[in-house]
Length: 195
Image 1 (spheres, helix red, strand yellow):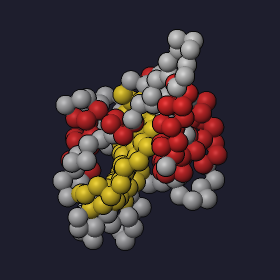
Image 2 (image 1 turned 90 degrees about the horizontal axis):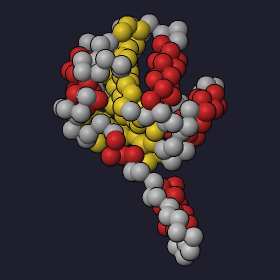
Image 3 (image 1 turned 30 degrees about the vertical axis):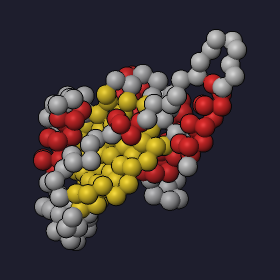
Image 4 (image 1 turned 120 degrees about the vertical axis):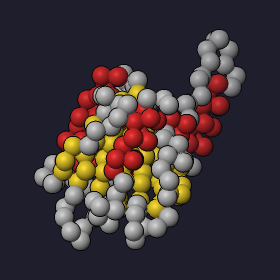
């Protein structure tokens, strides 16, 4: 719905222009997301555009998260110019991946994307039992596996800059043993490297 409003506003802004100026249509950020078939054993649940920093923060954070306002301010200060999110469900959530989501944020420049990468990983790690995960093919990327222990869900977070975009992937499984972290990191690294 919000994307339709942005597209409609762009079309109206360009209509009847007599000053020789043109209005560029917004970039469809969903085309910059990891592909639907990135990881076997998942099916796409939804894909949507996130035209504002508030939309992105609301999509990737829990309702009522006290860090949402500061994340929105940080994204806006970094020149947030649009984003998108794709959510997958695991085909057997009781045994393997339960949920996976990938998102992309277009920022002012590569420096802003790298700073947001650092902030995103630091926030996720904050006070959590986390270990680093290598992302083959994405030397500027960062990954962490949050494993709170037996009986609790494990979360993998991978993020990397692609030019002025920050691309991230989060995967959740019933346990760290059920989470194919290395395979997901390899697939994400290939995507980031453009292979």
